Image (cartoon, rainbow, N blue to C red; front, side):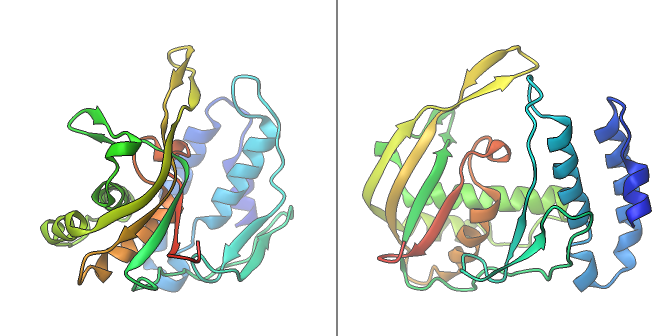
Length: 243
């Protein structure tokens, strides 16, 4: 594996494309491996790629950075973690972690850590219009899209029921505001404004809506809303009073 990683990386401008094709071909062979192994088969490549990108520099100014440590949470949202990478040439294997199947209670607190940017029928959702269904719906769409494009098949879910339960959930104690955020577009050669909602709020899940919680739980780690892949829409959920 170490030799394979070494062969993947070159110093040409096409490193990412070249590496991606090799890894994709390599992953095709991984489908014959046990699920426990295949689940995190690409972790070493992700960590290695981040470390190499930092050494080569990122952004227009090629700012250098150093990947010092990678932690694996034994339980999602828990306090227990283990070090899987600490600047060494290899990383430890980890076991997949599943989200909590049910919420700690029907009332949860949602903390929006980076701007949550949502559009409904082309209109931006402002802090005063934010509803529980917006947050839940954004998490469902994000997880569903990742499953469809990266897990091999769309999820077999009754989305009509999920939407009804989300619409029946309520939001209160809004402590949210609009925060502007900018990113540089190399393609357009300019900075683009991409603001969104930050802050916290309380969500009362509808009766019988425990099945919504896994969506919200997973969404903590993949983001939600517009430009989630760029860091927007990062949030955390916890039992009300323990956020």
